[in-house]
Image 1 (cartoon, rainbow, N blue to C red):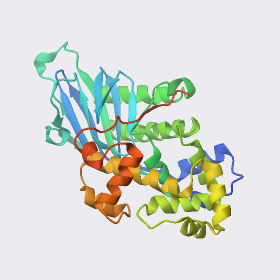
Image 2 (image 1 turned 180 degrees about the vertical axis):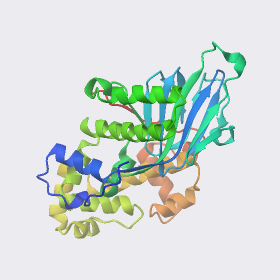
Image 3 (image 1 turned 180 degrees about the horizontal axis):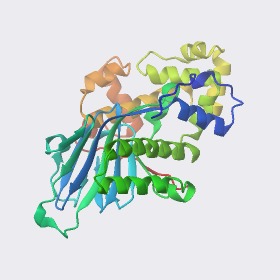
Length: 337
């Protein structure tokens, strides 16, 4: 488990090296399992996971192949694949696209210990059938002072060709496959700890690969003053941010702050605030847990109309259209660069 603490990264000097920065991230990470499941099923099957947005979901395919459906996208997962959904959300694991899904919470399971259970839906007559064995974990995912990174992560982080860069992950995946197939004493605890380490390895691989397309954000976060502002904006996206209030947060003049911000991130300070708000709005609308009015209020807009105008300018569609099934595809990252 990663339970050590570190100072807020915004206070770390800009001279810190890349490897030291990654160490700070990993030392500050808290990854604690809430529930784990060993699942064995035979086609046709469909399993739906409604993971809280404040939690991460981990899946490891020990045997067989499944289709991951998230939003409007589908992705094939093969034996040995491991994925992390850093913000959870509703998603399905399917044997084929046309199969209806059932909530994992409604499927009978056998408790093994406090946070581990087994689901076995392979009848005795299914000997020789192409069964699928997988391991899933729901985790609390806390990056401490680096928590803003979570909102920047793609919806799905896939091991992909991570193994070619980090071959040490392979023995962990192989150990997970063995533990998932053998009913040995203590296997539940070993599986959960291996899942924690593999999930942390996925995050580290993503960071070392440059954090996708947010490298400029990462460099800005390393700047003590800019990092302080970015963290504040992510904590309070609905605050009435102006260049003046952001410069005051950084302890700098408006002109110096605005120039430094734009040169580091390639966008104006207020443009960044709007961009973040629209990302959050898109996610909240897709999750359908908040009304448009609630989202507008949380993001600091005076009215639903003002929010809708800003959302359409940014995304090209209205919040209502997005809510009714016109959502853009989810982002999927492969750590293969």
